[in-house]
Length: 184
Image 1: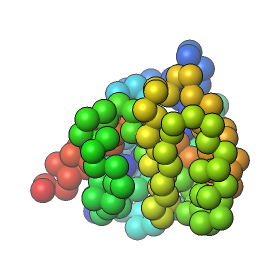
Image 2: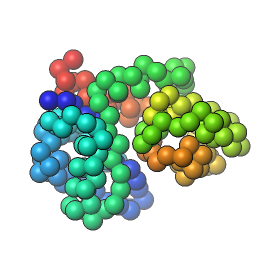
Image 3: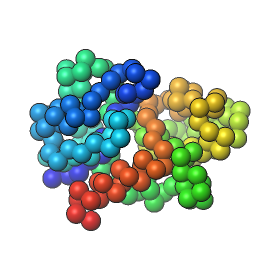
């Protein structure tokens, strides 16, 4: 059975879109997902499913979260192999080692066009650095994320696709848990 990592967009932020991780695990079981494990309170879940298409898994989960929580949001689902590639393809290894909390991976619904990535890079007014690899963006926020003008709304607008971000520490934890569930 394939192992997936599911990332919920915009939950448990500032008291909005509250989703209990315990209830999320119950929902996963109700939807036929197995061995669901959550990480942190930000909507990260690792699980098994007999559905062979990540896009189909996303649809099942999005419909389920709306019915269960009354929350219309998006899931971004990746396979273990994709998580391995995300870690291996990181264009910022020095930043990942020295300041992983300020390196964010954006999990995108679609791979952006190169012109869109260039437009995003040109829109940066601070010291942030952006690279895109397939359906993922990597953003370094050397001065921190909180005051940066490079917001998720700007990133989505320029790239022309929806996304959700996780810092490098969280990405590594999700990667490890997915591989652990896979028996590696």
